[in-house]
Image (tube, rainbow, N blue to C red; front, side, top):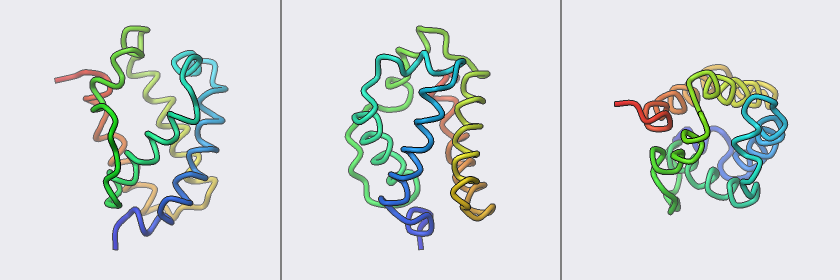
Length: 121
């Protein structure tokens, strides 16, 4: 069974993203990066990306992480901002009572993309 299935597939990912983006858009440190981003479109891209990353169906047609985050990096996106973003991601999973071993698997995947998001070698 995949992590995607273990987490509850598309329905659970969608619910988690709704709660997660409530936090992100409202956050005083990182909300600025999302101020002009269409939330509905972002959620669709994120849901498809996460489904793929968690071993579910691959319907993601967006840009790679490095390219997709060039705009926020030009606005100053840094490691501290990424930490806040990931903190909200973890807290959302915990609020939704995702088992701790699954939270750790998800966070390992999320942390695995940081070099691309932050454009590090």
